[in-house]
Image 1: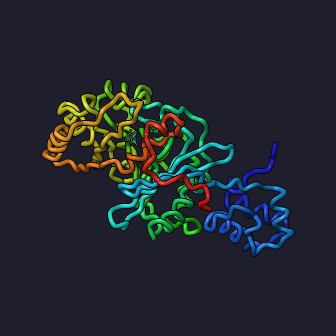
Image 2: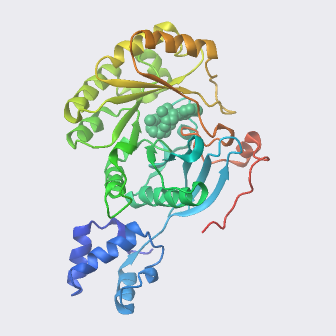
Length: 368
Ligand code: SAH
Ligand code: SF4
């Protein structure tokens, strides 16, 4: 087995120490850091301002294991592009580029785990189980590639990032935070924290830890029901992280960060879309400054749920708005290619047939 460490797992300090141990000058660490993160080289030989001898030595000690684009498909209707990336070990993860009207805004949706262990009943990723956590550089690298793809397809860099793809970010918090640090840093993608949103089901213990770190990015919580019994039925994680505990943790998060919290709420017909549910939601969200994002459910061939009817959605929205709550309604983009966040799952051939990709572009393996 290859014992060499991935060079991107080194912190800047460790990289500097390593280079100092080779007798290299101090500025070398900065040069290599830029190659690794800003330019995201896929081969040490691309580090052209290093001597051949140094490159050779680095290759003896480290590997790069770059993330590569495996395939992509674009939705003919809303232009959303779903990418499959290959990471070390042959695992496939997914990311999505979502352009807004007129491409003023391009949002990338990124993954944090291969699969997810939490098994929410409405979520396609949940059916996969957890294969493994992504390393920080794997999270960063697929976002970096999406930024390049955004320039190519939409003529502009990413404007927003949502951590809403495969996986539960708070179950891989250290790697997620390290990746986002570099995303926000001028040595990385220099993105503003205000334009980054991390979505979680609300793992209480980790929420406290995150709150203490006072993150500058936004937090979204996948609530989907403000009634404990209902939430536990559709999200097993609610059994060990019940709503009263979640409220306390989120109050603490608000206390620490002063940031308004967004609640995501999938509208599931006959499950969580009655006025009784809206009332519970209104009460829950009054605990802190918040915003409610109602999401249209993407039906999958396997799913047992149906999306709420337009009438139900209207009544639900009216109820909340009449109580002066901030509500937005999100139509799921890219649902025709199963690209919408929350539907990210490695497709089996059977799924591919069921989704009928015939109208879509052929897979392109030669993007890079
Ligand atoms: N694990 C995190 C982040 C990834 S899921 C979380 O659950 O928040 C991202 C979002 O997609 C969540 O709000 C999730 O509830 C939602 N989602 C899952 N399945 C969906 C589906 N079939 N249609 C629409 N949204 C879905
Ligand atoms: Fe995991 Fe989020 Fe899907 Fe639940 S909704 S199974 S936490 S990815």
